Length: 282
Image (tube, rainbow, N blue to C red; front, side, top):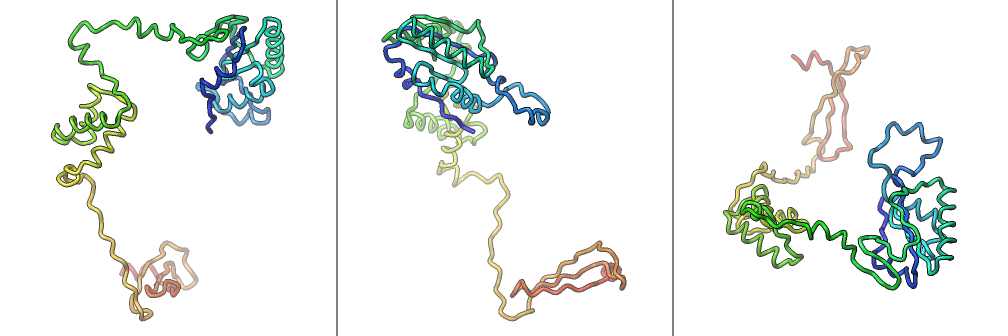
């Protein structure tokens, strides 16, 4: 079940001339989706992952449907309330909290911010007619200590940009010029120095399309069988197939096996003959 998340650019476009902002965060949001009383007994256990994001997003949009695109933005479990004036913002907050109370949804106070002229949201800092990057998100990169040993420097893979020609060049260097290793050894050789999204998929695709590998490498799988079409027989009962249905209850005549005879020229011509298992063993 998929639920399309709104684009960040579209979210920020909705703010318009807003100058006052508040942000609410629901406490363990996914776990606040309630189960119908008649279905509670069917739930044998509780999942640590809670409910699916799609189910929760659908709930939030149903709760605040008439507020969306007016003064409320929903992004999974984050609620942003925006207003042009402080007086209007107080009324918007009252409506939002009333709606939360009606649907028994609870917020986490420590993660909420109220009536701010500038507020962080979705990796950005938003204010009146201004949008900036949240510098706190860059702290890990800014505080990244440079490697001091050769081993540490060599252990860091280079993130390759999304350039198909560059990917093909690196794959050719690590595969064609490296004894044409297979899908087991080639990924280890490349990933030790480089990284890009779907690297493993690109490696497998490149090796499968390698002309030298297809011509010279021995197959590891079992050889394929040859497909021979069955001969069409014109004379009825000239070719038949036999099969036994065994271990059946004994009849009054002491038969416990059925011999099935099928004419290969017309499969609908079938005969069933009763036989005794003792005779077959002889």
